[in-house]
Length: 406
Image 1 (tube, one colour):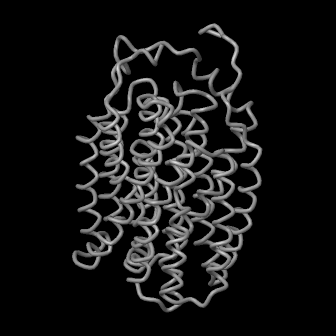
Image 2 (tube, rainbow, N blue to C red):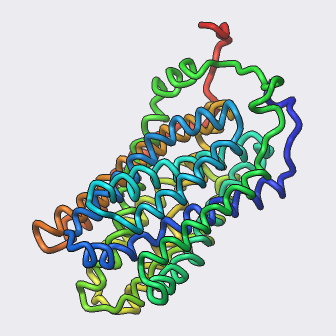
């Protein structure tokens, strides 16, 4: 059985996993800063840039399913190393887009595949298998907080690189930075995975998938995560341009994204701890409802740097705080043997939402000259997500023994 395998130390898992997520998520959180430099340099519409980032999110979600399967079977190290190489290649291609198709293939498909192999689903699989369930939600909160710290750290750095080196050279610097994931991934090599003594599983992949997709709570978690993706990627990519359209300086947008990252460090960590004590479904419902309230007040208040920073702090507390309770709930219900794969399927729903949020933001802006419709959709979807998370059942699923070849 898998639990009999020797374990990595908790410190090693958390440090290496947190640094991997910090780099991977930190780089991607700043992509909105490139929207105007690239579209102006290439004479493209915002929809062209937004479509590539939408494809990136969709590729991340779709490829993440298979990356999760590979990580569950062979361990995280190989998947992380390949993901880092793809990340560097995608960033180089993003720096030299000869036409929109090349931009979609590099900034979209390649970087999306890279994120599938270097972010939460892969790292959380290691955490789920290597860390005791009594500390699992907290540990997932630590990893999510690391991704938030990456946003806080990297967004101002990326803004400085663009200003000091130009947008193309800034992307090349990030390409080299992404390669640091490879040595960090060595600390996430799991004993017993991928070798001759790989542990046997109670379920095949198909059995695990059939069980999950028949279970209503899994479907509800997927629905809620769709909304999470829609909201955060729309805000992360389009808010810098929204603020500039309203007459605020680029520095305000850069500070706003950094504040989101800073406060999300606290939000994800706090939620990770609360997930050990409170019902995770109620935590998720509160997060989604809180986002809708925050967006509503942001749109109603006079737009000033101060109001932007307050909104960024509040939305930052709620930004990636859905990640620990969602993944911990999946682990509680189904166990950890197929955690990366099942987390990948739920995250695919998140990324469909991300695709819709970022793409509709660009499409509707080009057609109406405003982001208002997408802001209103974000509010309505947040209320919907709060409602659908309340019926989720978190207890372990009742499972009868099945023959391995069934």
